[in-house]
Length: 56
Image (tube, rainbow, N blue to C red; front, side, top):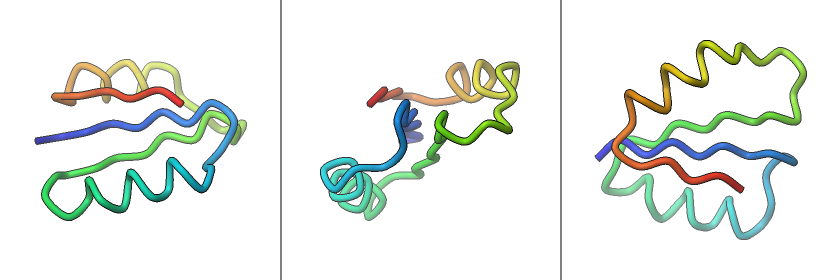
């Protein structure tokens, strides 16, 4: 399964733990929106490419 995590305010301890567990059996991609060099077209593409999207 392809899982996309969108971090609105950067990583937290909880998000790091969940991503770590999910990474064992899935393909996980992380987009950190707190970093300014974000391509919104790329984000939309990743959302549609993923099986599951989790926004923090």
